[in-house]
Amino acid sequence: MTDRDLGTKAPLDVIAASLHRERRRAGLSLAEVARRAGVAKSTLSQLEAGTGNPSVETLWALGVALDVPFARLVEPARPAVQVIRRGEGPAVAAEHADYVTTLLASCPPHAQRDLYLITAHPGAPRESDPHMSGVTEHVILATGRAQVGVIEDPVELGPGDYIAYPGDAPHVFRALEPDTMAVMVSEHR
Image (tube, rainbow, N blue to C red; front, side):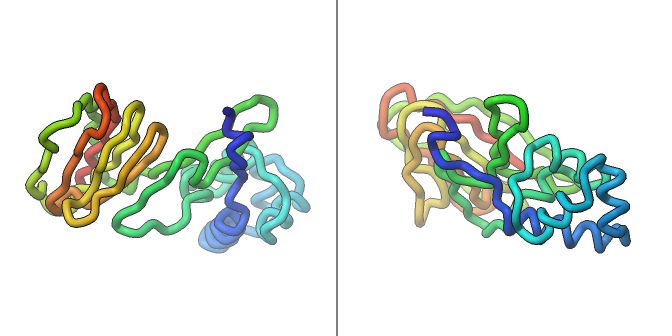
């Protein structure tokens, strides 16, 4: 099953609000941003109106023209604990390839991250004490099934699912199948 089969599409309302906000922040007209990005003014106008079907390439060019990361144009505000199931999340297709990019989490300014591969088996869960203040953990389950997150309310994940939760609160990783594997990013502020 491809991402196209999962019904992914660009988050038009988020893109519209982000483009408008960032263009205003930069103090630029529609015409100037369109010129800098090499896109038609009508295309930018449609995107700010929440219509159209932007490609990765178009959004990347607009991000460069506005001097903002791609993520700032497609990511909605996120709660402290977030779960993105496979096929969910702000996804944008490429114009000339069978390629879809789904933003899971953007890197905030001055963040530091550690990346881990987790291999776990059913049995005793890995319960972690709170880490230093401001730590957020991001987990993408690769194989198997697991319960992951804050100890009071862990979330069951399957392959391709993503969760982010406060690492400065007690948290758990409980494998529900043998050879469960995940990628974890520990983000320190």
